[in-house]
Length: 113
Image (cartoon, rainbow, N blue to C red):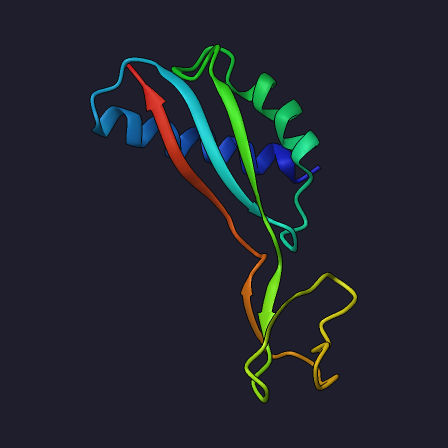
C-alpha cells in the first residue's frame, strides 16, 4: 500500500510549510489527485487518519480533489478525456501523445491556526 508512504510525505511537507507560515495547528489539507496517478483516495483517507496522530495535523481533515485525465491530439488539436486503457483521439483515432492532466498528485492547500 504505497498510499501510506505518500501520506507520510504529505505530513512532512505540510508540517514544514505550516512551521514556515507560523501555524501551530493544521486543520485541513487539500490534495489534487489525477485519475491516472494510480492512487486510491479511500486508501489515502485511511492512511491519513493513522499518520497524523501525534503531529500538528492531529484532528485535521483531508480533502481530495480528483483531476480528470485529459489529452490533446497533436494532429487535430482536439482535447478529450482519456483513461488508462484508451488514449485514442475520438476524432482521428490516432494515439495521443500529449497528456494535459491526470497524473497530478500534490498538496493544493493547507489551512490552520
